[in-house]
Amino acid sequence: MKPKPNRLTVEEAADWLDMKPSTLRTRIKNHEIVAVKDGKGYLLEEADVEAYDKRRKRAVHT
Image (tube, rainbow, N blue to C red):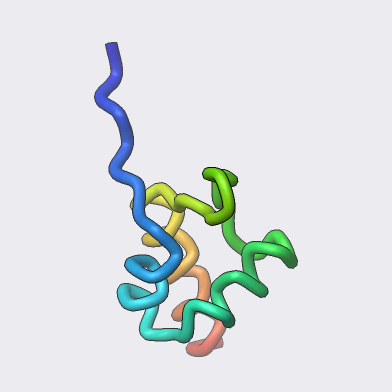
């Protein structure tokens, strides 16, 4: 059985990405990053946040 992925709240993920939570929520709604709806909020898998951060950094350097 695979281990359960580490999930972050929007606030935790926004802190990791060094952006405002409202900006991250907008990116989630625009489907720029994958998130799972959890009640009234969202949860993001750690791997998805890392992948988004790498794509974002690559876009800045090109």
